[in-house]
Length: 358
Image 1: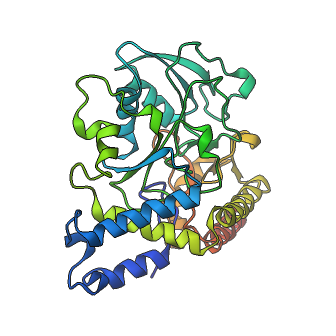
Image 2: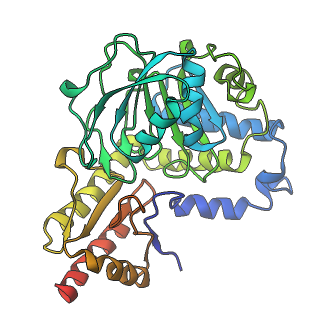
Image 3: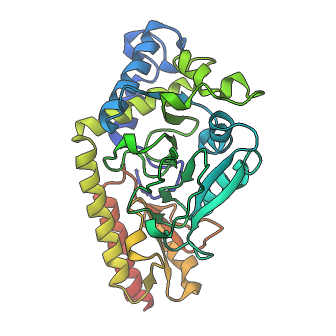
């Protein structure tokens, strides 16, 4: 029996995508082999890769002067790849600190650059700094931020204006959740395991003029220009994850694209936040204008009941609601693939839990 999976990542995948992959698993494209078994350099897989890139470009409106790369290593590897590719030794870079993942990116960048904190959310990480509160360096090679912090449930309601420096965004947990203007960014990267596909793949969208400047000593497989020149096939890519990502892109297009999915995401988030705000037993600590549409954090007003809530939720088929160890409480990740029925089931369970436990 399928359950409602609220995991932060690896996250739930669309059921239609899983069913198609199941049906094609051992005999893909009537070739007598699985897609996992064919050469990444074969025409058959090259067609898969080309369609996946074309569909992603269409969904996001990626201009022709941006490269789209399908890489390995997850988003955390990009914490290093970005400064290695975009800066020289001793360069100055700006980072906005709004939570767990931006802080990790900062620590890694400090291995390569002089990092200036252009803005932060304070110790509680329950809001984002306003544009007027950001203070950028005059000579920053780029500005990095995390539009959506998975663990803290904090999301930027705006795209920072940097005054000229390329904007770099870790969109791992909110990519493809709504329409964006790609031209506002110099580089976007996103781990696949939330809104794109299975873990093991990371997508990088980078403006062409920013590649080709990797610092000396950068491994070839980490060099964006080298990877782009080989169509992301400088070495063997994670072919199955790439294929699955392509199926997700097709699923998104069939549902009406990002305008339609954004509307569905808005309705899901509004339903869950309304239940939390209207309850006497649960609370969300994030500022209203910074609440994530993808990752909803909440906890009991009596924290000793959190463990019981999680236990009973598991029994009700509402899985993986436990908050990250760094934050505690509960975390409901309601990515693109979470149907509104799943959120409605969670809301109904919360109401029944409140009725039982007061």
